[in-house]
Amino acid sequence: MSPLRKPPRVGVLSLQGDFACHRGALESLGAEAVRVTLSRDLEGVEALVMPGGESTTMLRLLAATGLRAPVEAFVRARPVLGTCAGLILLGRPQGSQGLPAPPFAVLDVAVERNAYGRQIDSFHEDLDVPVVGARFHGVFIRAPRITQVGKGVEVIARRDAEREVVGVRAGHVVGLCFHPELTSDLRLHRWFLTEVAKLDLPSGAAAERAPAAAAPWSRS
Ligand code: GLN
Image 1 (cartoon, helix red, strand yellow):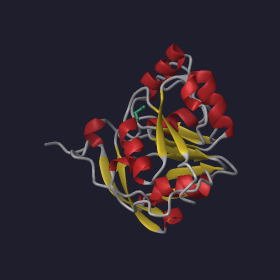
Image 2 (cartoon, protein in one colour):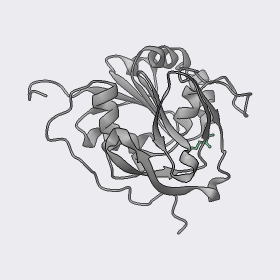
Image 3 (tube, protein in one colour):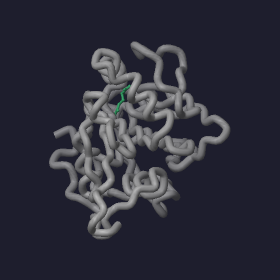
Image 4 (spheres, protein in one colour):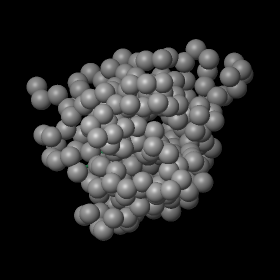
């Protein structure tokens, strides 16, 4: 990116969940991370991140704030990365699963909420993620499971156990069952911004950043 070009503007849906961690990752990569809480925040945004958190709460807040229609229009047309609850919002409806409104259905995958158990059953492990070169540490917190992958959806991440699918891409839409934003490894965010969203990042952008002060999955 030329020094005169502005950094890309990347929105982070910031109604609930771990949006601050995504903003930190995007800023470490030299992007301008924009908090999206109102529809006008989407102006000039070139890609959007939908964070992990609680999908039921996010759907309620999307309806209450009037953000649902503009966010839905954005994710139909523009690059979006959904992690965990964000993935649930992008997937196709599978019964109600306790959701107060249907998900956006821009990713042709069936997603089962809380499929690995309760919060205490959260885990982390190395995954096979060829789009970033090899292994990537996956943090799964009361994570959803991808139970069906539609035609035309590319698998981008698998667990070693039974080669289970935990990351997918369909064109401009990426969904992950785990949380790259809770590690110091920026490779998946960088891949999303440069390869999926086709954005230019400043050439000196970091490869890593400081890890989160307290790992959210630690029990101490
Ligand atoms: N269990 C949450 C949900 O159903 C997702 C958890 C997460 O985002 N880490 O929304």
